Image 1 (cartoon, rainbow, N blue to C red):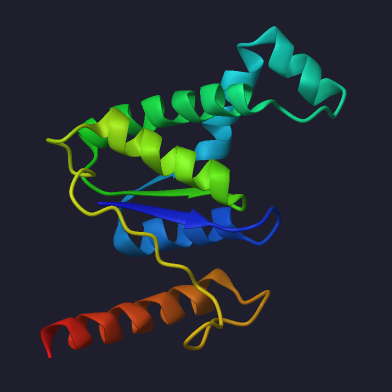
Image 2 (image 1 turned 30 degrees about the vertical axis):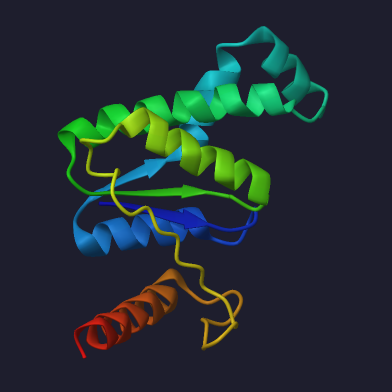
Length: 153
């Protein structure tokens, strides 16, 4: 199982991912670290970062491909992983999930149903903005228990 936590920059998703991973006693993969490695390995991307230029869609795909390669390698040795990424643009998010499906293949633990749960106020409660990772984790755990009971009943 791979749990992906997404959110805008500075919202605490890395802290939450670490707390979830620690609570579940699984590995935490910080996609940002893989992105930094990909950027450091490419002079054009380094230039863009140095001069605050946005990356092209092609560059973003390359960065995501590198991150997915690392995630794929990690999934071979770790059954469960928690990862975080901003995923704030629908296009980038859909590309990322498509790349996950492509890179993991049919026989992997990620093939099957790839689902994304979104914490928001739509259709239910959500943790307050700025809530601690522990409070958000309790909220996610409560929602998951409710979802499981609905599936059973």
